[in-house]
Length: 479
Ligand SMILES: Cc1cc2nc3c(=O)[nH]c(=O)nc-3n(C[C@H](O)[C@H](O)[C@H](O)COP(=O)(O)OP(=O)(O)OC[C@H]3O[C@@H](n4cnc5c(N)ncnc54)[C@H](O)[C@@H]3O)c2cc1C
Image 1: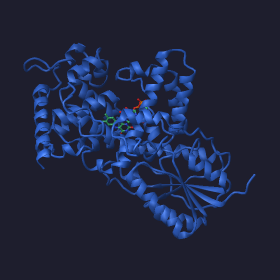
Image 2 (image 1 turned 120 degrees about the vertical axis):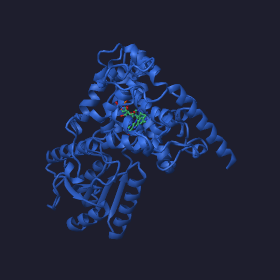
Image 3 (image 1 turned 45 degrees about the vertical axis):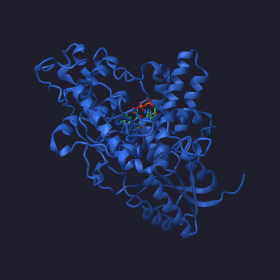
Image 4 (image 1 turned 90 degrees about the vertical axis):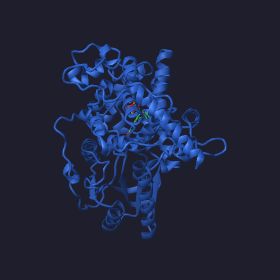
């Protein structure tokens, strides 16, 4: 066996909160006599408008689980707080580490921080190693024949599937004996001055829970994915979003386990389902590539043609509050918004419906919805969320064409024909026939006594949206 290259390597955990198939951790463990694992808790302290209690609570659970798992290797998770670069510098000096290992982040902020860490290591004269891990393919790997980024999903995904995919690495067998260094306690919500709303029900967090979710998904939902993924009442998707967000399972593991299921499947329908599921992983990486190549999407429309679109001022009415709280009088919209508040999750089909409703029926800017989702979604992922919002608003890469405006009533009929989803989340409507959710109530009588009338007329707002897009097009052409 060759000699380890490093005496002591720091593994800087970020969005890779697991031991198995963790690229940087694996390489740190094979190349060093000992590994010192650290997680640096951000010091946003509740000031950042994208920090919500549900996702931070889930993060705390992931860190607890990681800490327990590390103890099975006779190792210990060191917690530090504040700016990661300052925290790492202190830890390097205290421990006399001679290398830092980490996995690369897909977000611009994370990439900027890791560049500072590289500079720090160079200035201290120690080694720094970083790896692709959060994705199967980083933005620069999937390009057009001319070497340009894709702007449309279908050719991107075709190219994505043809690329060779890294296999699954094991779990390190040992991490050696690292020196004793001080650690802050595992964080709780108090750290960000947040508290969990009493009625929020959250799934278990951590590596074991993530593997259980993958196993359950491959035993059923993924096999019927093509047929059931748009049925919010069946809720037949993997629910792996938060795990992919915090890296309690690797995307390689999800892809390859699905591939094994596909290779062993008995029917064409199952194979199509599993392939459709894998295509969602390509959507995830498409949006990460869009963010990587076009970071302006965080501040502005991807498609600059729509920069003159007019938006309503949210301060001038209670429309945004009614949307957020699920009191719009549109049953499918209210069901989705209440599911989000109660669970930190919303079904994908309903995410599209509520997003189109906010932007095309209420004419409120997609950035308001993007921020609300980031605060509440456990799977809140900057790239996917921005991509999903800009897709729905019609302003994004490969967006829904602006003139294809979903009608919330007919969407309800098509995707929740028995009304089961609506009734689950809007108890005031439990006794109504499902047909009451398929068209607006006639006259001034609400669908149920304690349920509001629809706050807008979808047909009229649709026309207004088309007019707004037409004016924005003219303004762009004239400028
Ligand atoms: C307005 C809007 C906002 C969204 N915000 C987010 C977000 O913050 N984080 C997030 O992960 N997804 C987001 N999505 C995409 C999608 O809704 C979720 O990924 C999915 O509902 C998560 O449930 P699941 O884990 O059961 O997914 P599954 O259907 O089981 O899919 C498996 C995984 O594939 C990825 N994926 C699936 N669909 C998409 C998609 N359309 N775009 C990108 N990746 C996808 C996710 O990582 C997901 O966990 C958003 C979609 C819309 C329309």
